[in-house]
Length: 125
Image (cartoon, rainbow, N blue to C red; front, side, top):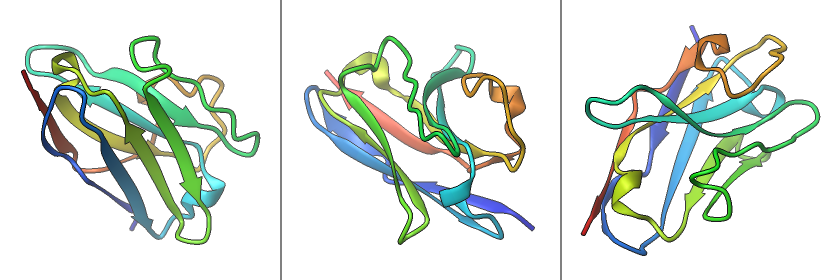
């Protein structure tokens, strides 16, 4: 049974950084499309970043481009989301998602089969 585990969230101040991690059991993240989504209270789920496979392209949401970096460590079979210059509007539950299928648009949440439980990121002003 495939399980994703995301971790690394926390409470930080404006301008701080955090690195989220996504690992999986029964699934090779090094050979899968993987994305991060976030959901703030009373808001819809929002695409943050993805790392595609096999092309390894990395699309980002406009709101995080230049501040966030998604990467993959194949030796650890882990996907990271490095978040710099965090702002209060980045406060949300962040979840990683993965799939074994080819997907035409890595930004669409309903194309992903597997999800982590979510990790809370809170940015204090």
